Amino acid sequence: MNVTKRTLLFVICGVVALASVAVATAADEPQKVVFTVGFTSTNFDSLNPTVGQLVPDYDVWNLQYATLTDKATADFATIPGLAESWQASNNGKTYTYTLREGLEWSDGTPLTAEDIAYNVNRSRKEAWLNYDATVKNLTAKVIDDRTVEITSSVPDPKLPTMDIYILPKHIWGELDAKEIAKYPAQDGVGSGAFLLDEWKRGQYVRMKANPSFWQGKPAVDEVVFRIFNNPDAMVAALEKGEVDAVHNLPSEAVERLQGKDGIVVVEGNQGGFDEIAINGGDGLKKPHPALLDRRVRVAIAHGIDKEALLDRVYLGLGSVAETVSPSPNPEWMPEIPPEERFEYDPEKSKQILDDAGYVDTNGDGVREMPGGGEPLSFTYYVRSESETAPPVAEFVSGWLKAIGIEIVQKPTNADQLITIIGKGDYDMFHWAWTPFVDPDPQVSYFQCSQIASDPEDPTNYYNDANWCDPEYDKLYKQQNVELDKDKRVELVHQMLKRFYDSAVYQVFALTPDLQAYRTDRFEGWLKQPAEVGPVLFSNTSPTYANLTPVGSSGGGGGLGTAGIVAIAVAGVLGVGLVAFLLRRRRSADERE
Image (cartoon, rainbow, N blue to C red):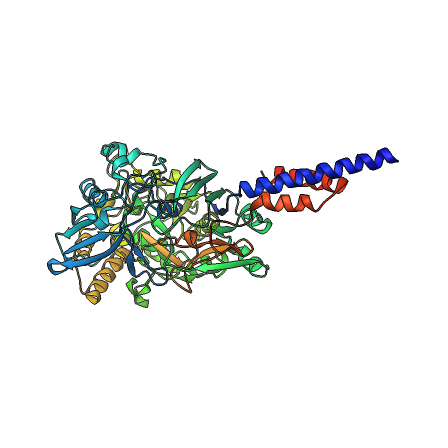
């Protein structure tokens, strides 16, 4: 009896001692504050800002590379970034920017006007993919370490906005043009709020807080972008607290999560749209010959029920659209007169095809080329990681079958599809865009010059319709230098109307970014734009640097996991403690 008591006393003393050690360790080594975002994808396209194309890539760039000017969270207004101020001269063609004092790269190298000039001049000279629309008419000159002068050779309605990602010259300047295009950009050197720490392909990207960030080190120590191949698994991870927020929330999960305590669902509108693209035939390879006939493309357009896609695939989340949305601001979208719209009318589709000589001569339900040639059987690529792409493909296949067109679905993923489109080796696919604030980048993508031209590098393009129209290019150049806002809007409308009439893009819906986040861990969520925008994967991604742990004063993180464990240990004795420790270790193993 006495032995048993002594043994228990010994155990209790050991427990208290261990608890004391744990508390001391927790105090000495505060746990990292980690913010985890889940999203559905197969991977990031590239962490290199000169060549990447997918929305997740942009969030990594937004966090790692600051820009000369920034955009206001509320309304996208141009605000100071690396530059604290600027002055216009030369009738608005020249802007002189003054950098903040004491700027430096995360590796301690000073960030100066030389870095700014390098990025502007080299990206213009080499036509970097994600820079060209902004810098093609610009020349930068260093005045001194904190002053850079940027001059446009033509009137530029985008100035003084300078939102290209500023890359460190002392690293990127060592690479030649071919090396830059292939550079993995995993050096982790930047000037933004967070820096790349690790990229596990197909699994996650981890970023760490930048103590050299000009706005101060964020309260979050790490941001983890976790990739899910299964959207249901992603939602379950949010509900269990394994992730703090999710992007690309499945439509069917919206209503369920809206009723959950501690979870906020966001339908973020920033001009995103979904389209079914048809190969226009001006790329490296040609599509099915029937698709080079505008009449066939128009027949396809009349054969797609946009209302049904929105209601049955997107569960009514969004709105039916006709044309490309080039900006979060809807004024840049043209209004298509009702009589000129490609409304759903399968009987009209059949009549168009009949009149053009595309008839079914052998009775197999599939029309052939005029004169009884090749059947109208089109390859349609379906992104396997997308929640919406497979059901959209099923509906479209059924509708087109009803008008005598066969669709052969081929599964792929985003990485593979970029190369396939660049080669022009496709007939149709479904994807989506999220535009920038100024319409210029989005409308620039459909220029003839944006079609992939190098068989060795078919990823260096943006014109995923493989469509070329000299008149469209002419209008683009006009809007690019038009300072009168109303006139510029009209020019953009003319461009998008021509693009619509070509019937190579069947835009069918304006779709919100469906997101959700937990409220028990972090506060400081920011919608961009205010009231209606998403909280993550937005134009400049302001939420990450603004987040703080719930209940903290914003000073770098809360108690942390070790502290919580230590307190629990100190309050539990004997066998109860042992059971607690065993349960905790097992649950941690399951999470991993």
